[in-house]
Amino acid sequence: MNRQVAIFAAATLTPVPLLAAAAIWGGGYVLLALGYLTVFTFALDELAGYAADPEQPDAEFPATGALSVLLALAHYVLIALAVYALSGGTGLDWHELTGLFLAFGIFFGQVSNSNAHELIHRPKKSLYRLGKWVYISLLFGHHTSAHRRIHHRFVGTRGDPNSARAGESFYAFAPRAWYGSLIEGYRAEKKLLRAARRSKWRHPYLEYFGGAAALMVAAGQIGGIDGLLAFVALCAYAQIQLLLSDYVQHYGLERRVGPDGLVEPIGPAHSWNATHWFSNYLMLNAPRHSDHHAHPSKPFAALGMPMDEITPVLPHSLPVMSTIALFPTLWRKMMDPRLSDLQISRPPADALGAH
Image (cartoon, rainbow, N blue to C red; front, side, top):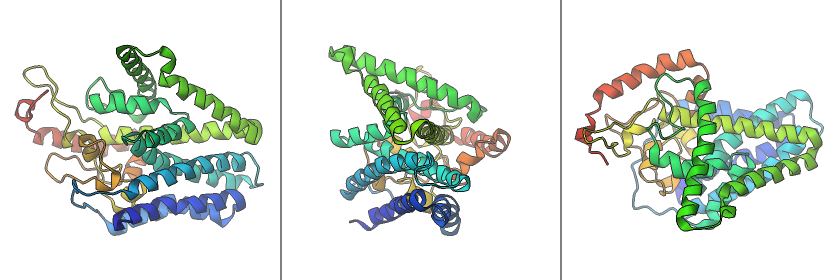
């Protein structure tokens, strides 16, 4: 295994046994699991500082697929275990259950989400389906369609519900993005079905909603009404973190319209990036967002960090900035001046080219 991929594996797989032990035995394992995903990650980011490895466009990372498969399979096991434990199956007290809910929710929102995001961009159909079902298991199946069909095409424009506008709070953005992506993803898939003259019964939203309903029934079978409520709450927590990532990574960044009325191409200036060492490994390089938008099919281990004057860089790691985004006044005080500086430093759209 490539050394770099081995570090990704160590960062992302370490919490899996910790979460399992916390769900079964509680006690100190809850603190270990939660601490690893919060305090430990923050401390390593601060101690190690920034990591901007050079872009590796020609490198091959075959082990990334195996790691993503392993993480997806672990996710399916962990979400069932979480529902069982949170519904009282392992006899934990309310203090332990609170910590357990937070730890599982952070893992699903940051690691499982990042891995599903990686998988739905893979050209191999089996990997794509695996990622799709991770999103379905988080009751967020429509994100599979909206992210690939809408977000990547219209990012930085009003056509993308998941691009946050300057001055927009997360609390205004989240419902608009959730509902907008649901509707726009549906329309995009319907249009593709019509163009291919395929049956409306092949619409992927039937799988998204059918799978969600089946999993909710399964959660009820595992833990009764408490299991169902725990499952829905975990999914909501994970979805909020996904929406926070979208909010932070595209806040206020717009693609300009050139003199010919065409929108400029997607470039490094249209995503906020973070280069903090450990959280990048934990989130499979998702914070290196500009390179992902430039090369959506590039494996996570190969993503680079463009370092130039027009590349927006967050002042703190993505998890820290996602927390700050929950406090709109603090967020705008920190981010709006940076956004203004970027807008001033950028060349006009006609100098960048439009399409």
